[in-house]
Length: 249
Figure 1 (cartoon, rainbow, N blue to C red):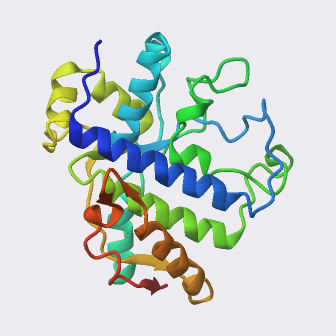
Figure 2 (figure 1 turned 180 degrees about the vertical axis):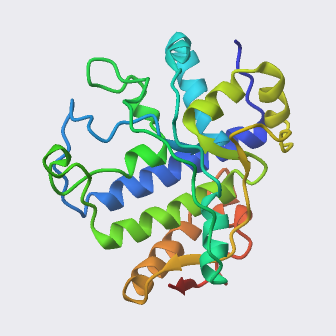
């Protein structure tokens, strides 16, 4: 596969990396016990956007790692019923969201000897999951409440950035993009046809934020709104970013 990335997608990828970098620096303010080889939380239930999928494919092609995609086979994994922005819409309007179908916990197919071969371009769902306590002791990650709120804000921003794309399990997204026709449609900025397991991305309805985190979230949003790449403001993708307030939940 020869991945040809259009101008618009190239710019969006640069904003994606900028968001990743911003988050990685911000997250350093929180303690973490995660170390190389700690893979308790690395499962096949990773949710990503198509833009993040293209980021992974492009990296894999440049590093000669496209054969890694042959490993992406699993069963009974999480397939979301709503996107992050759909969930926000439901919560803001006090509507009960649909429940996800049942799924199991299995290791991520990418894992190789307990390590991630695409760590440099790991999606946000992965880079935002780190714990203040050892996961294997209690069976789950312990994440600071403020960081959980910030994580939700970023997943909403990433969905809006990929406004013409899709959202779903990493296995489904990468399998979808591995089809050259699907990839070509996406690269043209068109919304791909409905695909089982994948959901069309939705626009920002507002941000979910408890009252005690509102000032911090609005500060983060203000800083993000100042990001500029190639004379293009980040707010081009978020026309309402400056007017949107963090909705109390």
